[in-house]
Image: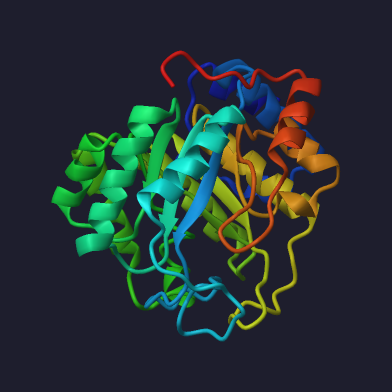
Length: 321
């Protein structure tokens, strides 16, 4: 708790600090400190976002964790880009469910031509007809594309760094860690906020998780999604053993200590926890994806709202949303 109080007072952890204690300190102690940091620096608000798979399957990239890669033999659905009307219909439903942010995610290295025009039209419609914050996740784009997204009403771009620089080549070789950093820089240059995190449980070391947390702090990322690998049959990681709840909680606490004012956003893997993952929200988490993930079943939106309200959290939209 001493370190938690120092962080609340303004201390920030960096690469010169010995952070090995995150792997050895009792997990309940870490989670208590992380929750104290969250309460003190972020308040009691939980940010709720939801995603839609706008174009599925047949991805050219070989990310070992992904069901949508054309390099793997999975039972993943495949379909072309949804229409602006379909996106708007789904977004209106999520708006009515009082979710705060809505993101279109598309499979593939990038989006170009008619598909990109469809996305721009969709974002303009959603910006005009809903109260949602709009987030986009469309792979490796050019600088002008980011300006176009901003003009269409998008406020945040999602580009996970996935893991540490050291471990990245172990999970993907069709693009690089530096490609990810370039996208983040381009999004920021266009005036977009950035959502960037990664996946744990892919075979990385705890030091890799520390490195990822530090990299995101250095990039000043304020929305950090943490996914727990849900092994998909047919992918190279399909037989990985899921992380224990303690390993997940220890990692969540680490990210809160290293990124004390960010939204630590629980994404895939909350279903590994009982009671909707209540313990996560008492261990540093202050944001979550609600509803289904891209290729896996997520948590029920209504049940999430009821749970968070019962826990005493504020889940109303902020006035600037």
